[in-house]
Length: 412
Image (cartoon, rainbow, N blue to C red; front, side, top):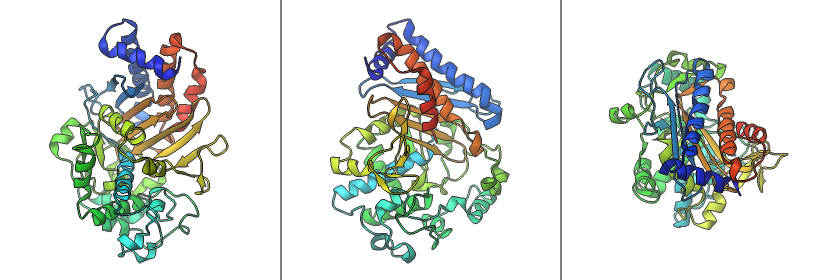
């Protein structure tokens, strides 16, 4: 029996309370979270972990949380607590543009010059190249000027145009020549959405996803200061990155970032959600009729991170690829999975979707650690191993070690 079917049965029993073994699965998953927090708490300045798992489209979701809502605090984390989802926001931006394409408003082959003439140096870059990170445009949040300005006033507001101007008119390579992660490209994509719809990006999110379509509850977007009511529902998030590229942000170290402005992220990373709510989005993204077939094919058309060139899929030889706001990995023992680790100044949110088993895992943590100290992949591997162990009596599976190693690779 497939892993998906076995886990689905266990999760159903867990939620329905019809078996004594099923709660043990939840306890085992919570123990995975607790071990991570105990081992990594002081190193990553992380104190909260929240996990949601959906084994199949109609299976009940299991939610597990561990830790406290503040570092050194006593209030326990619950599955209802909110996390910033970071660059998982990019898929929302990409889907909006693909929906506009399906409606005949634009095409992802359109050039930037058609929609954003205020950036003539970028006029020949296509929308698709913005979305798949082959535009060559540097990311504004790697600039000393932007980081220094934010550290000086983390409560301030930066418009989309101001963010783009931190790097304009620079390019690192001709469009399509390589792959380069760029938040700037997604801020420009946000600007194209607003130009094409004659509407605010936030309003389009509400109309398309939060109030209609997937009807995402407990999911919010704020382009500036987060309201106090949402802050109170969120676990504290801590910036704890000491790497050289983050030196300008040193004044923010170990601070709770909840009150800080999200204007630095906007359409590149400013959505807030719970892991439970976010599972609904992940399913809609990869499975639902939210996107027409042609547009979903475009969403999942990938380029190699190594070369920036189009490829059919990730392979063992070229294991990391990127689509339109989504990432793909070929991992030994797992095969192809879609995933993303979204990160803001104080949060990490990871989603993994298996097209083979239809399982979805969403995990939230409440810190941004040093780049070389983020070991969320090992935690994902431990979670996979636990699921495999508790489903082994229902069917044959691969080794726990192979699954653990594969999931660890998938997170970055």
